[in-house]
Image 1 (cartoon, rainbow, N blue to C red):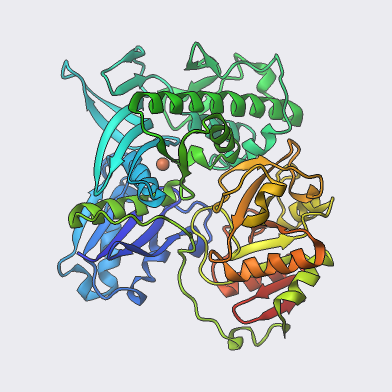
Image 2: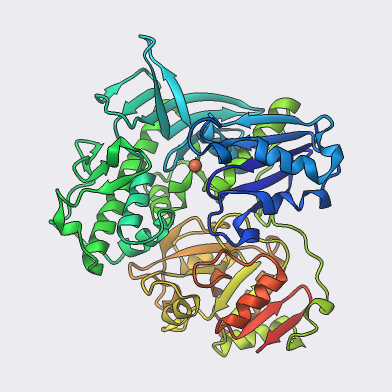
Length: 549
Ligand SMILES: [Fe+2]
Protein backbone atom coordinates (compact mmCIF):
# COMPACT_ATOMS: atom_id res chain seq x y z
CA UNK A 1 0.00 0.00 0.00
CA UNK A 2 1.54 3.27 -1.06
CA UNK A 3 -1.01 5.88 -2.11
CA UNK A 4 -3.74 6.90 0.32
CA UNK A 5 -6.35 9.50 -0.52
CA UNK A 6 -8.16 10.77 2.54
CA UNK A 7 -11.10 13.17 2.65
CA UNK A 8 -12.73 15.18 5.43
CA UNK A 9 -16.44 15.00 4.68
CA UNK A 10 -17.75 17.78 6.87
CA UNK A 11 -17.24 21.53 7.08
CA UNK A 12 -13.60 22.50 6.32
CA UNK A 13 -13.62 19.62 3.84
CA UNK A 14 -10.09 18.73 2.78
CA UNK A 15 -8.16 16.23 0.71
CA UNK A 16 -4.88 14.67 1.83
CA UNK A 17 -2.71 12.56 -0.46
CA UNK A 18 -0.26 10.41 1.51
CA UNK A 19 2.40 8.55 -0.49
CA UNK A 20 4.77 6.15 1.27
CA UNK A 21 3.81 7.80 4.54
CA UNK A 22 4.67 11.32 3.39
CA UNK A 23 2.15 14.08 2.72
CA UNK A 24 2.29 14.87 -1.01
CA UNK A 25 -0.36 17.52 -0.67
CA UNK A 26 -3.13 18.58 1.66
CA UNK A 27 -5.65 21.20 0.70
CA UNK A 28 -8.92 22.53 2.02
CA UNK A 29 -11.51 22.65 -0.73
CA UNK A 30 -12.57 26.22 0.07
CA UNK A 31 -9.27 27.46 -1.43
CA UNK A 32 -10.36 26.08 -4.80
CA UNK A 33 -14.16 26.42 -4.73
CA UNK A 34 -14.11 29.84 -2.99
CA UNK A 35 -16.94 28.64 -0.75
CA UNK A 36 -15.86 29.49 2.81
CA UNK A 37 -15.66 26.37 5.03
CA UNK A 38 -16.82 24.29 2.05
CA UNK A 39 -18.57 21.03 2.99
CA UNK A 40 -17.58 19.17 -0.19
CA UNK A 41 -14.28 18.20 -1.75
CA UNK A 42 -14.82 17.85 -5.49
CA UNK A 43 -12.51 20.64 -6.67
CA UNK A 44 -9.56 19.11 -4.84
CA UNK A 45 -10.38 15.62 -6.13
CA UNK A 46 -10.14 16.85 -9.72
CA UNK A 47 -6.40 17.54 -9.23
CA UNK A 48 -5.56 13.93 -8.30
CA UNK A 49 -4.56 12.62 -11.78
CA UNK A 50 -1.67 15.11 -11.80
CA UNK A 51 -0.16 13.37 -8.75
CA UNK A 52 -1.17 9.68 -8.91
CA UNK A 53 -1.85 7.05 -11.57
CA UNK A 54 -3.32 4.50 -9.19
CA UNK A 55 -5.01 4.67 -5.80
CA UNK A 56 -4.50 2.03 -3.13
CA UNK A 57 -6.83 3.39 -0.47
CA UNK A 58 -9.64 5.90 -0.32
CA UNK A 59 -10.32 6.89 3.29
CA UNK A 60 -13.34 8.95 4.26
CA UNK A 61 -13.38 10.69 7.62
CA UNK A 62 -16.90 11.50 8.73
CA UNK A 63 -19.01 12.05 11.80
CA UNK A 64 -22.18 10.02 11.19
CA UNK A 65 -23.22 7.00 9.13
CA UNK A 66 -24.63 7.69 5.68
CA UNK A 67 -28.20 6.92 6.71
CA UNK A 68 -28.18 9.47 9.53
CA UNK A 69 -27.70 13.23 9.34
CA UNK A 70 -27.11 14.62 5.85
CA UNK A 71 -27.13 11.30 3.94
CA UNK A 72 -25.69 12.80 0.75
CA UNK A 73 -22.58 14.21 2.39
CA UNK A 74 -22.00 11.19 4.58
CA UNK A 75 -22.23 8.68 1.75
CA UNK A 76 -18.87 7.42 0.52
CA UNK A 77 -20.36 6.85 -2.95
CA UNK A 78 -20.31 10.47 -4.06
CA UNK A 79 -16.58 10.73 -3.43
CA UNK A 80 -15.55 7.27 -4.62
CA UNK A 81 -17.56 7.55 -7.85
CA UNK A 82 -15.99 10.89 -8.55
CA UNK A 83 -12.45 9.58 -7.93
CA UNK A 84 -13.00 6.42 -10.00
CA UNK A 85 -14.22 8.47 -12.95
CA UNK A 86 -10.98 10.40 -13.14
CA UNK A 87 -8.82 7.43 -14.10
CA UNK A 88 -9.75 3.82 -14.87
CA UNK A 89 -6.78 2.50 -12.92
CA UNK A 90 -7.99 4.15 -9.71
CA UNK A 91 -10.56 1.48 -8.88
CA UNK A 92 -8.70 -1.70 -9.88
CA UNK A 93 -7.64 -2.68 -6.35
CA UNK A 94 -8.68 0.35 -4.33
CA UNK A 95 -9.71 -0.32 -0.74
CA UNK A 96 -12.31 1.95 0.82
CA UNK A 97 -12.23 2.89 4.51
CA UNK A 98 -15.51 4.49 5.51
CA UNK A 99 -14.66 5.85 8.94
CA UNK A 100 -17.45 7.87 10.51
CA UNK A 101 -17.27 6.81 14.15
CA UNK A 102 -13.87 8.07 15.31
CA UNK A 103 -13.74 11.76 14.54
CA UNK A 104 -11.88 12.64 17.72
CA UNK A 105 -9.38 9.85 17.19
CA UNK A 106 -8.61 11.24 13.73
CA UNK A 107 -7.95 14.69 15.27
CA UNK A 108 -5.80 13.10 17.98
CA UNK A 109 -3.68 11.06 15.57
CA UNK A 110 -3.19 14.07 13.30
CA UNK A 111 -1.60 15.95 16.20
CA UNK A 112 0.32 12.91 17.50
CA UNK A 113 2.01 11.99 14.20
CA UNK A 114 2.88 15.65 13.55
CA UNK A 115 4.16 16.36 17.07
CA UNK A 116 7.39 14.39 16.92
CA UNK A 117 6.55 12.70 20.25
CA UNK A 118 7.12 8.94 20.65
CA UNK A 119 4.08 8.62 22.87
CA UNK A 120 1.61 11.34 23.77
CA UNK A 121 -1.31 12.36 25.88
CA UNK A 122 -3.64 13.71 23.19
CA UNK A 123 -6.65 15.84 24.05
CA UNK A 124 -9.35 16.76 21.53
CA UNK A 125 -11.98 19.42 21.96
CA UNK A 126 -14.30 20.59 19.19
CA UNK A 127 -17.93 21.56 18.61
CA UNK A 128 -18.95 17.94 18.43
CA UNK A 129 -17.40 14.78 17.06
CA UNK A 130 -18.81 11.50 15.87
CA UNK A 131 -22.27 10.31 16.65
CA UNK A 132 -21.67 7.01 18.35
CA UNK A 133 -23.78 4.22 19.71
CA UNK A 134 -22.97 3.67 23.37
CA UNK A 135 -23.96 0.67 25.36
CA UNK A 136 -23.92 0.75 29.14
CA UNK A 137 -23.84 -2.18 31.49
CA UNK A 138 -27.62 -2.54 31.44
CA UNK A 139 -27.61 -2.91 27.66
CA UNK A 140 -29.34 0.42 27.48
CA UNK A 141 -28.18 1.56 24.06
CA UNK A 142 -28.21 5.27 23.34
CA UNK A 143 -26.71 7.78 20.93
CA UNK A 144 -24.30 10.47 21.95
CA UNK A 145 -21.79 12.80 20.34
CA UNK A 146 -18.14 13.19 21.25
CA UNK A 147 -17.41 16.50 23.00
CA UNK A 148 -14.02 16.22 24.71
CA UNK A 149 -11.71 13.22 24.45
CA UNK A 150 -8.38 12.18 25.93
CA UNK A 151 -6.22 9.39 24.55
CA UNK A 152 -2.76 7.99 25.06
CA UNK A 153 -1.25 7.35 21.63
CA UNK A 154 1.79 5.36 20.54
CA UNK A 155 3.40 4.09 17.34
CA UNK A 156 2.59 2.53 15.06
CA UNK A 157 -1.13 3.07 15.74
CA UNK A 158 -1.90 2.18 19.33
CA UNK A 159 -4.46 4.09 21.32
CA UNK A 160 -6.07 3.95 24.71
CA UNK A 161 -9.11 6.01 25.61
CA UNK A 162 -8.49 7.69 28.96
CA UNK A 163 -11.62 9.79 29.20
CA UNK A 164 -14.41 11.00 26.97
CA UNK A 165 -17.17 13.49 27.60
CA UNK A 166 -20.21 12.52 25.59
CA UNK A 167 -22.79 15.14 24.85
CA UNK A 168 -26.22 13.66 24.89
CA UNK A 169 -28.95 15.70 23.28
CA UNK A 170 -31.90 13.95 24.85
CA UNK A 171 -32.66 14.64 28.49
CA UNK A 172 -30.69 12.30 30.67
CA UNK A 173 -29.80 12.69 34.29
CA UNK A 174 -26.15 13.66 34.54
CA UNK A 175 -24.16 10.81 35.88
CA UNK A 176 -20.86 9.06 35.67
CA UNK A 177 -21.35 6.30 33.14
CA UNK A 178 -18.20 4.28 33.60
CA UNK A 179 -14.50 4.89 34.13
CA UNK A 180 -13.86 6.49 30.77
CA UNK A 181 -17.17 8.02 29.73
CA UNK A 182 -18.91 11.04 31.19
CA UNK A 183 -22.37 11.29 29.73
CA UNK A 184 -23.76 14.75 30.17
CA UNK A 185 -26.81 16.56 29.00
CA UNK A 186 -24.66 19.42 27.83
CA UNK A 187 -22.42 20.80 25.13
CA UNK A 188 -18.72 21.34 24.54
CA UNK A 189 -16.72 24.54 25.13
CA UNK A 190 -16.18 24.90 21.38
CA UNK A 191 -19.94 24.70 20.83
CA UNK A 192 -20.38 27.57 23.33
CA UNK A 193 -18.17 29.74 21.12
CA UNK A 194 -20.14 28.72 18.03
CA UNK A 195 -23.35 29.65 19.83
CA UNK A 196 -22.09 33.04 20.98
CA UNK A 197 -20.67 33.76 17.53
CA UNK A 198 -24.13 33.24 16.03
CA UNK A 199 -25.73 35.25 18.81
CA UNK A 200 -23.49 38.22 17.93
CA UNK A 201 -24.52 37.94 14.27
CA UNK A 202 -21.37 36.25 12.95
CA UNK A 203 -21.16 32.91 11.16
CA UNK A 204 -21.08 29.98 13.60
CA UNK A 205 -17.53 29.00 12.62
CA UNK A 206 -16.25 32.54 13.21
CA UNK A 207 -15.45 31.91 16.88
CA UNK A 208 -12.16 33.77 16.39
CA UNK A 209 -14.13 37.02 16.21
CA UNK A 210 -15.59 36.34 19.65
CA UNK A 211 -12.06 35.70 20.93
CA UNK A 212 -10.94 39.03 19.42
CA UNK A 213 -13.83 40.87 21.11
CA UNK A 214 -13.06 39.29 24.48
CA UNK A 215 -9.95 41.45 24.86
CA UNK A 216 -12.16 44.56 24.92
CA UNK A 217 -14.33 43.13 27.70
CA UNK A 218 -14.24 43.46 31.45
CA UNK A 219 -15.92 42.00 34.50
CA UNK A 220 -19.65 42.75 34.35
CA UNK A 221 -21.90 41.50 37.14
CA UNK A 222 -24.90 41.45 34.82
CA UNK A 223 -23.34 38.68 32.76
CA UNK A 224 -24.29 35.26 34.16
CA UNK A 225 -21.64 32.63 34.91
CA UNK A 226 -20.69 30.23 32.12
CA UNK A 227 -20.40 27.35 34.59
CA UNK A 228 -22.40 26.53 37.69
CA UNK A 229 -20.85 23.96 40.05
CA UNK A 230 -18.47 22.83 37.32
CA UNK A 231 -21.20 22.26 34.74
CA UNK A 232 -22.16 24.50 31.84
CA UNK A 233 -24.92 26.90 32.88
CA UNK A 234 -27.94 25.41 31.19
CA UNK A 235 -30.11 28.37 32.10
CA UNK A 236 -27.84 30.39 29.81
CA UNK A 237 -27.22 27.95 26.96
CA UNK A 238 -30.30 26.08 25.85
CA UNK A 239 -30.62 23.28 23.37
CA UNK A 240 -33.55 24.19 21.17
CA UNK A 241 -35.81 21.12 20.87
CA UNK A 242 -33.00 19.21 22.55
CA UNK A 243 -31.10 19.47 19.27
CA UNK A 244 -27.34 19.60 19.75
CA UNK A 245 -26.77 21.60 16.58
CA UNK A 246 -29.10 24.38 17.62
CA UNK A 247 -27.78 25.87 20.84
CA UNK A 248 -29.13 29.32 21.72
CA UNK A 249 -28.52 31.97 24.34
CA UNK A 250 -31.55 31.96 26.59
CA UNK A 251 -32.47 35.64 26.47
CA UNK A 252 -35.73 34.98 28.28
CA UNK A 253 -33.68 34.15 31.36
CA UNK A 254 -31.06 36.82 30.62
CA UNK A 255 -32.61 39.75 28.67
CA UNK A 256 -29.43 41.80 29.33
CA UNK A 257 -27.75 39.65 26.67
CA UNK A 258 -30.36 40.54 24.05
CA UNK A 259 -28.26 43.43 22.79
CA UNK A 260 -26.14 44.68 19.91
CA UNK A 261 -24.19 47.02 22.19
CA UNK A 262 -20.49 46.33 21.61
CA UNK A 263 -19.32 46.71 25.22
CA UNK A 264 -21.91 44.30 26.61
CA UNK A 265 -21.10 41.77 23.90
CA UNK A 266 -17.39 42.20 24.63
CA UNK A 267 -18.02 41.67 28.36
CA UNK A 268 -19.89 38.47 27.55
CA UNK A 269 -17.06 37.33 25.24
CA UNK A 270 -14.55 38.16 28.02
CA UNK A 271 -16.38 35.95 30.52
CA UNK A 272 -16.72 33.13 28.01
CA UNK A 273 -13.03 33.28 27.11
CA UNK A 274 -11.87 33.47 30.73
CA UNK A 275 -14.06 30.76 32.22
CA UNK A 276 -13.68 28.26 29.38
CA UNK A 277 -9.89 28.53 29.19
CA UNK A 278 -9.64 28.05 32.94
CA UNK A 279 -11.93 25.01 32.75
CA UNK A 280 -10.04 23.46 29.82
CA UNK A 281 -6.67 24.10 31.47
CA UNK A 282 -7.79 22.41 34.70
CA UNK A 283 -9.02 19.44 32.65
CA UNK A 284 -5.64 19.11 30.91
CA UNK A 285 -3.85 19.26 34.28
CA UNK A 286 -6.11 16.47 35.58
CA UNK A 287 -5.36 14.27 32.59
CA UNK A 288 -1.61 14.84 32.98
CA UNK A 289 -1.88 13.94 36.65
CA UNK A 290 -3.93 10.85 35.86
CA UNK A 291 -1.51 9.46 33.24
CA UNK A 292 1.82 10.97 34.29
CA UNK A 293 2.51 11.76 30.61
CA UNK A 294 4.10 15.14 29.91
CA UNK A 295 4.27 15.05 26.11
CA UNK A 296 0.89 16.58 25.36
CA UNK A 297 -0.86 17.32 22.07
CA UNK A 298 -3.99 19.41 21.67
CA UNK A 299 -6.27 19.46 18.63
CA UNK A 300 -9.85 20.06 17.56
CA UNK A 301 -11.38 23.42 16.67
CA UNK A 302 -11.24 24.83 20.21
CA UNK A 303 -7.44 24.88 20.06
CA UNK A 304 -7.42 27.44 17.26
CA UNK A 305 -8.10 29.78 20.17
CA UNK A 306 -4.60 31.26 20.46
CA UNK A 307 -5.48 33.20 23.65
CA UNK A 308 -6.50 30.00 25.45
CA UNK A 309 -3.44 28.23 24.03
CA UNK A 310 -1.13 30.85 25.51
CA UNK A 311 -2.93 30.63 28.86
CA UNK A 312 -2.43 26.84 28.84
CA UNK A 313 1.23 27.18 27.80
CA UNK A 314 1.92 29.52 30.71
CA UNK A 315 -0.23 27.70 33.27
CA UNK A 316 1.40 24.30 32.69
CA UNK A 317 5.03 25.19 31.97
CA UNK A 318 6.61 21.87 32.89
CA UNK A 319 5.25 19.88 29.93
CA UNK A 320 6.17 19.50 26.24
CA UNK A 321 3.20 20.99 24.44
CA UNK A 322 2.33 20.60 20.77
CA UNK A 323 -0.79 22.31 19.44
CA UNK A 324 -1.82 21.16 15.98
CA UNK A 325 -2.09 23.97 13.39
CA UNK A 326 -4.54 21.82 11.41
CA UNK A 327 -6.85 21.73 14.42
CA UNK A 328 -10.05 22.40 12.53
CA UNK A 329 -11.70 19.51 10.70
CA UNK A 330 -9.33 20.13 7.81
CA UNK A 331 -6.83 18.04 9.81
CA UNK A 332 -8.90 14.88 10.21
CA UNK A 333 -8.22 13.74 6.64
CA UNK A 334 -4.49 13.80 7.46
CA UNK A 335 -5.04 12.06 10.81
CA UNK A 336 -6.99 9.23 9.22
CA UNK A 337 -4.55 8.80 6.31
CA UNK A 338 -1.60 8.54 8.71
CA UNK A 339 -3.47 6.14 11.02
CA UNK A 340 -4.08 3.78 8.12
CA UNK A 341 -0.50 4.06 6.84
CA UNK A 342 1.20 3.44 10.18
CA UNK A 343 -1.18 0.63 11.08
CA UNK A 344 -1.03 -1.26 7.78
CA UNK A 345 2.72 -0.88 7.39
CA UNK A 346 3.68 -1.25 11.04
CA UNK A 347 5.60 2.00 10.49
CA UNK A 348 7.30 3.52 13.54
CA UNK A 349 9.05 6.36 11.70
CA UNK A 350 8.51 9.72 13.42
CA UNK A 351 7.82 12.53 10.93
CA UNK A 352 7.71 15.77 12.91
CA UNK A 353 5.83 18.50 11.10
CA UNK A 354 8.31 21.27 10.32
CA UNK A 355 6.32 23.19 7.75
CA UNK A 356 2.72 23.23 6.59
CA UNK A 357 3.15 24.44 3.01
CA UNK A 358 1.12 21.50 1.72
CA UNK A 359 -0.80 23.07 -1.20
CA UNK A 360 -0.40 22.16 -4.87
CA UNK A 361 2.80 22.83 -6.82
CA UNK A 362 2.39 25.52 -9.46
CA UNK A 363 4.94 26.42 -12.08
CA UNK A 364 4.33 30.01 -13.10
CA UNK A 365 6.40 32.01 -15.58
CA UNK A 366 6.49 35.64 -16.74
CA UNK A 367 4.12 34.59 -19.52
CA UNK A 368 1.40 34.24 -16.83
CA UNK A 369 1.72 37.91 -15.89
CA UNK A 370 2.40 39.38 -19.32
CA UNK A 371 -0.68 41.61 -19.10
CA UNK A 372 0.21 42.99 -15.69
CA UNK A 373 2.24 46.05 -14.79
CA UNK A 374 5.27 44.15 -13.49
CA UNK A 375 8.85 45.21 -12.80
CA UNK A 376 11.87 43.14 -11.87
CA UNK A 377 12.92 43.66 -8.26
CA UNK A 378 15.14 42.30 -5.53
CA UNK A 379 14.34 41.80 -1.89
CA UNK A 380 15.90 45.13 -0.89
CA UNK A 381 13.43 46.98 -3.14
CA UNK A 382 10.49 45.29 -1.44
CA UNK A 383 11.81 46.02 2.05
CA UNK A 384 12.15 49.69 1.09
CA UNK A 385 8.54 49.77 -0.09
CA UNK A 386 7.44 48.33 3.26
CA UNK A 387 9.41 51.04 5.02
CA UNK A 388 7.61 53.54 2.74
CA UNK A 389 4.36 52.30 4.33
CA UNK A 390 3.20 50.35 1.28
CA UNK A 391 0.85 47.39 1.78
CA UNK A 392 2.38 44.38 0.06
CA UNK A 393 0.82 41.04 -0.84
CA UNK A 394 3.34 38.21 -0.86
CA UNK A 395 2.53 35.25 -3.09
CA UNK A 396 4.89 32.29 -3.56
CA UNK A 397 5.21 28.51 -3.57
CA UNK A 398 2.68 26.14 -2.07
CA UNK A 399 -0.18 27.41 0.06
CA UNK A 400 -0.32 26.97 3.81
CA UNK A 401 -2.65 24.33 5.27
CA UNK A 402 -4.95 25.54 8.04
CA UNK A 403 -6.29 29.04 8.58
CA UNK A 404 -3.01 30.96 9.10
CA UNK A 405 -0.89 32.68 6.46
CA UNK A 406 2.77 31.93 7.12
CA UNK A 407 4.47 33.85 4.35
CA UNK A 408 3.31 32.15 1.15
CA UNK A 409 -0.14 33.78 0.92
CA UNK A 410 0.30 36.86 3.14
CA UNK A 411 -0.47 40.55 3.22
CA UNK A 412 2.44 42.44 4.84
CA UNK A 413 2.73 45.87 6.38
CA UNK A 414 4.94 47.91 8.69
CA UNK A 415 4.08 46.83 12.29
CA UNK A 416 5.35 50.20 13.63
CA UNK A 417 2.55 52.14 11.93
CA UNK A 418 0.20 53.29 14.71
CA UNK A 419 -2.80 53.29 12.34
CA UNK A 420 -1.83 49.98 10.75
CA UNK A 421 -4.64 47.95 12.29
CA UNK A 422 -7.36 50.33 11.07
CA UNK A 423 -5.80 50.73 7.62
CA UNK A 424 -5.57 47.00 6.94
CA UNK A 425 -8.92 46.17 8.56
CA UNK A 426 -10.47 48.62 6.10
CA UNK A 427 -8.67 47.10 3.14
CA UNK A 428 -9.65 43.58 4.18
CA UNK A 429 -13.19 44.77 5.04
CA UNK A 430 -12.96 43.21 8.50
CA UNK A 431 -14.58 44.32 11.74
CA UNK A 432 -12.68 47.23 13.32
CA UNK A 433 -11.91 45.38 16.56
CA UNK A 434 -10.05 42.44 15.03
CA UNK A 435 -6.32 42.26 15.74
CA UNK A 436 -3.46 41.32 13.42
CA UNK A 437 -0.64 38.84 13.66
CA UNK A 438 3.08 39.32 13.19
CA UNK A 439 6.12 37.37 12.05
CA UNK A 440 9.48 37.77 13.79
CA UNK A 441 12.88 36.36 12.92
CA UNK A 442 13.23 33.60 15.48
CA UNK A 443 16.56 34.79 16.85
CA UNK A 444 14.92 38.10 17.87
CA UNK A 445 11.63 36.66 19.17
CA UNK A 446 12.35 36.82 22.89
CA UNK A 447 13.32 40.50 22.69
CA UNK A 448 9.90 41.51 21.34
CA UNK A 449 7.54 38.79 22.62
CA UNK A 450 7.34 36.46 25.60
CA UNK A 451 7.75 33.42 23.37
CA UNK A 452 10.73 31.79 21.65
CA UNK A 453 9.24 29.18 19.38
CA UNK A 454 5.92 29.51 17.58
CA UNK A 455 6.33 28.41 13.95
CA UNK A 456 2.61 27.98 13.24
CA UNK A 457 1.11 31.06 14.97
CA UNK A 458 -0.77 29.09 17.61
CA UNK A 459 -0.24 31.47 20.57
CA UNK A 460 -1.28 35.05 21.37
CA UNK A 461 1.61 36.05 23.60
CA UNK A 462 2.55 39.31 25.30
CA UNK A 463 4.32 42.03 23.34
CA UNK A 464 7.30 43.39 25.28
CA UNK A 465 7.68 46.68 23.40
CA UNK A 466 5.54 49.69 22.52
CA UNK A 467 7.15 49.81 19.06
CA UNK A 468 4.69 47.46 17.33
CA UNK A 469 1.30 49.22 17.65
CA UNK A 470 -0.18 47.81 14.42
CA UNK A 471 0.03 44.24 15.69
CA UNK A 472 -0.45 44.79 19.42
CA UNK A 473 -4.00 44.01 20.49
CA UNK A 474 -5.84 46.07 23.10
CA UNK A 475 -4.76 43.58 25.80
CA UNK A 476 -1.08 43.88 24.86
CA UNK A 477 -0.84 40.55 23.01
CA UNK A 478 -0.05 39.43 19.48
CA UNK A 479 -0.43 36.12 17.65
CA UNK A 480 3.14 35.48 16.57
CA UNK A 481 4.94 33.37 14.00
CA UNK A 482 8.62 32.81 14.74
CA UNK A 483 10.54 32.25 11.52
CA UNK A 484 13.77 30.43 10.74
CA UNK A 485 15.63 30.66 7.43
CA UNK A 486 15.08 26.97 6.62
CA UNK A 487 11.32 27.35 6.99
CA UNK A 488 10.83 30.00 4.33
CA UNK A 489 13.94 31.51 2.74
CA UNK A 490 12.24 34.29 0.72
CA UNK A 491 10.12 35.43 3.65
CA UNK A 492 13.08 35.30 6.02
CA UNK A 493 15.21 37.36 3.61
CA UNK A 494 12.50 39.98 3.26
CA UNK A 495 12.11 40.46 7.02
CA UNK A 496 15.89 40.49 7.39
CA UNK A 497 16.19 43.29 4.79
CA UNK A 498 13.45 45.23 6.56
CA UNK A 499 15.44 44.75 9.77
CA UNK A 500 18.61 46.13 8.16
CA UNK A 501 16.77 49.30 7.11
CA UNK A 502 14.59 49.83 10.18
CA UNK A 503 16.20 47.87 13.04
CA UNK A 504 12.82 46.10 13.36
CA UNK A 505 12.97 42.30 12.69
CA UNK A 506 9.16 41.98 12.68
CA UNK A 507 6.52 42.30 9.97
CA UNK A 508 2.76 42.66 10.17
CA UNK A 509 1.43 39.47 8.58
CA UNK A 510 -2.19 38.71 7.72
CA UNK A 511 -3.79 36.25 5.34
CA UNK A 512 -4.03 37.18 1.66
CA UNK A 513 -7.78 37.51 1.28
CA UNK A 514 -10.37 40.27 1.55
CA UNK A 515 -13.99 40.55 2.52
CA UNK A 516 -14.12 37.21 4.38
CA UNK A 517 -13.22 35.22 1.25
CA UNK A 518 -11.03 32.10 1.50
CA UNK A 519 -7.27 32.75 1.20
CA UNK A 520 -6.07 33.03 -2.43
CA UNK A 521 -4.75 29.82 -3.92
CA UNK A 522 -3.67 30.35 -7.54
CA UNK A 523 -1.74 33.21 -9.10
CA UNK A 524 -4.85 34.40 -10.91
CA UNK A 525 -6.71 34.45 -7.55
CA UNK A 526 -3.86 36.55 -6.18
CA UNK A 527 -3.93 38.99 -9.10
CA UNK A 528 -7.73 39.33 -8.97
CA UNK A 529 -7.75 40.01 -5.23
CA UNK A 530 -4.85 42.45 -5.60
CA UNK A 531 -6.65 44.38 -8.34
CA UNK A 532 -9.98 44.70 -6.57
CA UNK A 533 -8.38 45.80 -3.28
CA UNK A 534 -6.29 48.76 -2.14
CA UNK A 535 -3.18 46.63 -1.71
CA UNK A 536 -0.27 48.60 -3.22
CA UNK A 537 2.06 45.89 -4.50
CA UNK A 538 1.91 42.20 -5.32
CA UNK A 539 5.35 40.65 -4.73
CA UNK A 540 6.23 37.36 -6.46
CA UNK A 541 9.66 36.31 -5.11
CA UNK A 542 9.72 33.10 -7.18
CA UNK A 543 10.01 35.32 -10.29
CA UNK A 544 11.72 38.27 -8.53
CA UNK A 545 8.91 40.53 -9.68
CA UNK A 546 6.66 43.21 -8.21
CA UNK A 547 3.28 43.96 -9.80
CA UNK A 548 2.10 47.51 -9.30
CA UNK A 549 -1.17 49.20 -10.15
FE1 LIG B 1 -13.72 18.25 14.73
